[in-house]
Structures are given as structure tokens and as C-alpha cells.
Length: 440
Image (cartoon, rainbow, N blue to C red; front, side, top):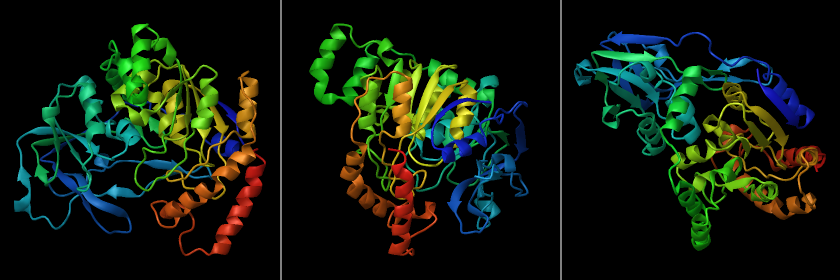
């Protein structure tokens, strides 16, 4: 059960209320499967209607151990819980028995690496709970051969206290004396276990705020202001109290390839005038983010990864989620229950065309819902002409939308692609525009 407040359209509230009263917590003890002579297969590409890749854990006969699969579920808009299709499904038949390496060690299977910060925290760390109650031994994980960036995941494993020399990425099928497969302590989008909260709490406690940390963090965000920051630090003006209320920004200049976006700095400036500290997480390290959010009691962030980072905050605190699109991400409800958060959702976008949840682009603005929030919370706010703001950025939005959803990574996430006609696009533009105008 979660405590939600809404400043949203009826459509958005309807979607949220489908799932807000569900119990997302796993109440049973997490299971562990011990596979004698188990084989761990690397992740490898495959073309199959039911699954995408080979990989994971099998027993000595080649039977796939389902517990080793990265399990994900999603809610559709009919309030139905459905599993994603299987990502990987065990042994690649091309391997002959004599190619499989042999090891007389016992290992714990950590799962599959997904190169995304939030997924690293929620999914890649979902089996490390096993070492809360057991002595360290070797652990293994798998990843797509094309994935080279592992630092985010490794930083958190190290912060947990796991000895990094015991962690191995499997690149060739390997038979071990025994493979221990723990159940996931967090499942997208609908389940968490208190063991996952314990894991994140240990990581947070192992990253204490040291002297001058906040000064160094502010220098990373504002390198041109280092003389002023140096003086403020000397005068003791950079204090942990400044981070009790935080607005996490999205930086349009630091983004993954194929994911263009607009900044929400214009909204952030309003919150800054009302006592919030602006923090750009993409200009600092992931461990810096942990340290800052461990101080935060009132977080404001755009829906998605920034808002999900309540997992580093104290329990029983506040988060305000600025919805960047019509989509409802149930991970936020799951995290809100895990942390017992007081959560407010505000529709704060004006997207002239339909957008995918991940790829966007997202045009954030001060909607009537955000204005009502300002009024109810006695914000200092000077109303501006939001229609003029939208017109100013409309061309950029359409250009980025075309790059993303016709030629880029976003096209497979929408209900249309480049085969759609210009008439279809213009019709969607007009229909969405009519709906959007009611927001301003």
C-alpha cells in the first residue's frame, strides 16, 4: 500500500489507481537453489520468437534453471500483470561437452548485467542479499559481449563490501562444483523483499559523508565557480543541511546516444527559489549521488531514474515526481512502499506527439497541475506565458522526435514507425495538441 497525492489528469490518475493499493512486498523467505555440477553459460545472441539470447545456469544434463532467469513483470493498462518474454534460456547447443571449462569451486550466480544505473541497483544487486547471511565465496555474472561498461555495477558491489577479486564475468561455459542461485530480492515492476532494502542500506552505510565531500561534489557540478565555492567552503557555508530538499536535474548535454531530451532546469529554478538544492547527478559519481540523497528528506525529480533514486533516501520521507509523459511506471509505487514514502505525482509535460517511456523527447513545462501544486504549497512563483515557452521549443521538439522515433532507438517503442504516413503523424499531433492545451 502506498500514500500517493495526485496533481494529474483524470487519465493519469486512473492508471495510477489501478495499482496503488497493491501489496508489492514479498513476505516469504527468499529461496535458494543449489545446483551440483551446475554450468554457467555466457550471454549470446539468438533469434527466436520466445527468447532473445542463450545464457544462464543449467544443471549437468542441460536443463535450464528458471531461477537464474532475470524475472520481470509489467502491468498493462487493463490492470493485468504480465511477464516479459524470457531474455535468455540456457545452453547454446553449438557447444560440445569438451569445450566446457571445469572448476572445482562453488560460486553464487549474481545474474545478468544490464548497462543502466537504475537497473544495476534494482536488478544486478538483487541476488547479493545471499551474502548478508553467508560468508563470501566466488560470485559470477553474465553480460552481452558488446557491453564493456561495468563500472556502475562494480562500484556498488565494492561498496557492499564484496571482495572484487572474487567476482568473475563468465565469457565461456563453465561447469562448477556447485552453483548457488538465489531468488531475486527485487523484480521489475512489482515485487521487493526487505532483504533488498537491507542491501542498499549496507551500501549507503559503507559510503559515509567525509569532510569536504560536499565541496568536491559542488565543484564537479560547477567547475567554473570553484573560487566562490572554495570561499564558501572556508566559511562553512557548504553544509549537509543544504541538501535536505533536493531537485534532481536532467542534463541535456550528458545523455546516452539516441536519447535526446530537454532540460527541466526552468522548473528546477522555481524550486530553487523555494529552498531546494539543484543537483545534476550526471555530473557526479554514483557514489556521490548516494551520499547526497542519504541527506535528503524531500526530493523532487522527473519520472524515471531520477525519481527512482528514493532507494538511497531515509524511510518515511517525501518525493515529488514530475511526470514527463502519460506513462505510469510502477517501479515508483514499488519503491514508495519499500521506503514508506509520501509520494506526490504531478503532470508536468507538454509533448506535442506521442513519446516512448524511455526515449522521449520530453518537453517539460509548468502545467496547470504544477501551478496548483505551487499554490497549495505557498511557493514563490511568478507566472509566465507557458504557451510562448512551448512555441519557442516546438521546432526543437519535432526535430528531436523525428530523429528518435523515425530514425533512432525510439521507433520500436511506439505504435508506429517510419511506415506511417505524414497524415497519421499530423492527426496524432492535432489530437495530442487538443489534450495538451487543457494543461496550460
